[in-house]
Amino acid sequence: MLLARRGRTAHERQVDLLPQLLFEINWGDSGPGYSWPESYHVAWVPGFSRYVVTASADSTDAYGYEDIAIGWFEEGEGRIEGAKRVIGDWWRGYRDRDHEGWVDLLGTGLIDEAGVRALREQIWSHTDEAELDRQYEEEQERLAPYKAQIDVLIGQLTANWPKPGSYAASVAQGMKRTRLRDAIERFVLENGRLPDPGECALE
Image 1 (tube, helix red, strand yellow):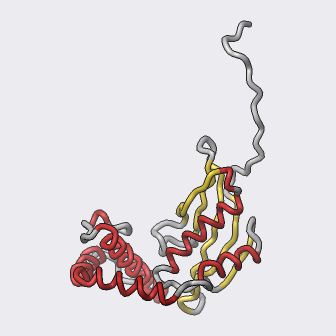
Image 2: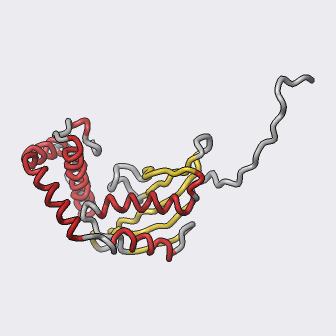
Image 3: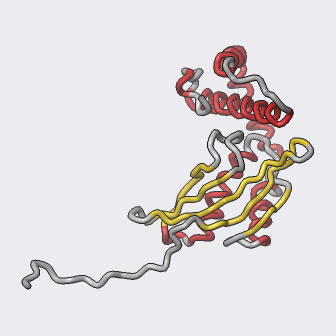
């Protein structure tokens, strides 16, 4: 047999192709027996040389999906450090919207308890409260001309939502409405205009 090109030796890679648990937290309890757990996993994506970090909830109430991708990093960054960076950026988004830090560590995986708590400390315990207050006041001034229009838009988008049939459903719907308002306000701050209904992230 004649070959047109020289053969190459395949390189073996020791990579977990299934998502690996990083850790799991509880954001808080909205009532007796109603918690908001969130677990984080990291998975290698073959063909792209990337790791993807996901956040998973036990229902679709929080994000519209049970599992969402929150970021990625390249192989050279290191699996643990890359995952910490992505999750840290995710948590900063919560912190910058005045969300308090999570309350319980429910379990650990690739990142141990010390590493998880250190990451929480890094995000929430060294916040410059004065700077956050200044940023919040500035954003509220920019949003002020749009407040009435935002209320109308939210009313239109939620008009067909089903009436909650339980306390848990009522809490979940209230949180969903809050996230909708946050998404609209972020759009206004970034684009200087009110979004069309189809541009709203939760629609």
